[in-house]
Amino acid sequence: MIDFATLRKTFAEFSDGEPRFFRAPGRVNLIGEHTDYNDGFVLPVAIEHETIVAIAARADRLIKIYSVNENAAAQFDLDEPGAMRRGIWLDYVEGVARALMRRGVVLRGADLVVESSVPVGAGLSSSAAFEISTGLALSAISGAEIDRIALALAGQEAEHTYVGAQVGIMDQFISALGKKDHALLIDCRALTAENVPLDTSEIAVVICDTRVKHALANSEYNTRRRECEQGVALLKKALPAITALRDVSTEDFAEYQNLLPEPIRRRCRHVVTENERTLDAARCLKNGDLAAMGELMSRSHESMRDDYEISCRELDIMVEIADDCDGVLGARMTGGGFGGCTVNLVERSALDRFRRKIMQEYQKATQIEAAIYISEAADGASEIKH
Image 1 (cartoon, rainbow, N blue to C red):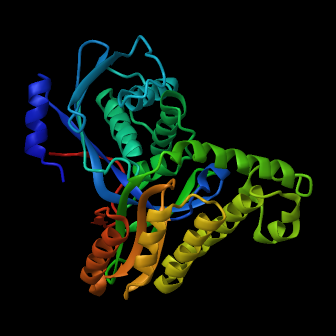
Image 2 (cartoon, rainbow, N blue to C red; image 1 turned 90 degrees about the vertical axis):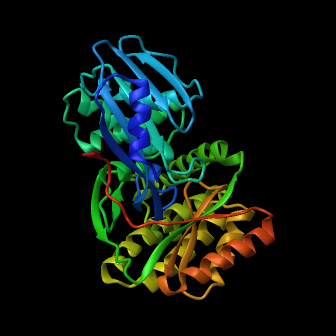
């Protein structure tokens, strides 16, 4: 985790100002994958890995930022927009600043030092934690009170415009609005959410990082979006009122799926059934039925592997090992796919055995050393009084 004394010292070497500190968490999605950009439902939790920003206002209009993780500094002028999609980490910061300004937030110049404990490339939303923490910090130092949903939308806009990733709203939403000891059932169309209690007294949320990220991820993500849009267009012939796959029930899909060619049929089947699984999973958590929740997670992985085709050999191996462990209630890939992490519900009494088995058998099968994180559900973005 991040050491505040070291971060404060680093800031003092970078700026003469007196810093305030802000944080935003990464996330792991329990269920509801690739449903957010289909106006559907997701059930993520904020995790204890987070991005922390030290910030002080400047007298001019410059934003100067130093990334501890990148060991690099950069800057931009609030009055002179920079080029979009440069492919550098500064895109996330400038992107969220411009999005806030378009929402009427009058920003001041500032010095920022940023450090993150969210693993990069693991599918745990390091980018959203970066966007939301810097967005909150820039707003606060400028004396602006920003609605948390507006902050999440600004982070999403940064991804769309400055980064060039057509992401859904889930990652920024949970980073901004997560609640300790709860999952968040997000309606990605209405931009509303319900806090769902997550009792981890007997079970743990365990994240297993495959340590791989295949190059297919970005291109296939955009392809899946197009396939879903094509599916909606074809299903409109029978269901003219629909505007997204969220509007298609499992009964509708069973009746009209023959309107869809392959692989569009399978893509749409995943989204339609995943929305149903997500709503069922939220009910299971509310009722304390973790065994049923685990079964839904397993079916979700099968759907992503076979219908949406976004898993990969390493993810499937990780899930298969977990499924063979005593005390595991459910296991599935989480995130965009083609690498990254699995999320597992594991009885606390079985944690040590689970860790050993995953580490040993995954390395034997792939020659890759996995990383394992255990996290409680954390709060969303906030100022840290330190």
